[in-house]
Length: 370
Image (cartoon, rainbow, N blue to C red; front, side, top):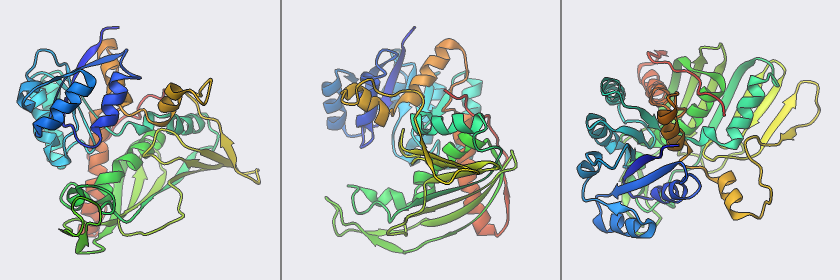
């Protein structure tokens, strides 16, 4: 198969796993040809470590004849600018989550991509991992009957306790919904299909937070966005879902995601990861059953390569996109899916502010199961 050439813009905290996986487990399918970062030394170090060419600017990279797909892992507020530059240069682009900060930006990006006959993809791709794909198989095969409801919980006390530069989590484009909501909502849309309308309530738990991680220990952060959000989701299928995302909870015993069907309940593993324990309890059963994961199980659990594949497949979304371009089929972590999730998140905030339902204007297809 022809290898698609990938250029990376942004060599921050999450770039390491992308570089490891795209040059390692997925390296037979794609090739990273160039990378760049605003911090030149950071780009040069990564280039040396992975034997990849470093270029000076994002503009140089998106215009390079040696790049087919731009992997945009800049901070959220920069997603639109970098992605639009790539699309206008005739390049496919794959953004880290969220697709863009604003709905209007995301809509403009997708329109420009269509006009330039290039593709847009976006994280998260954790829904393509063994954990959620196992749940998808169980739902599609009718193990819990017809899904009628769902609940999802992402409850923590924020990132200022561990992240080296956590301020952006509390600014526009941040907050628990925009930070972690894409993982949960993408998983739910993959399992249950698109959403038609939402309602919600949102509040700010603290006006100011203090960083306790290094190197900014003691620095105060002004909180500009809601930090506890509750949303209600009406799915086109008729199912109703509830999602709570919070940076105001010190501890919780709530499940990550549960799907409730006419014949049983399915517990979905943490959608921030690619695998995890899948538990099923059907209506006549007294106990939960742990379901073996589909897609891959290691021949030898001690084998390092198999262990890595099972636990972190970061990059599978852009790899599937690259293969889909060559094969002429839809890719799974699509721009349309990411835009629908982005509109859901904004819609929940809008519904809270206006005290009403928000009717979704977008929709999408459920991604094809692996």
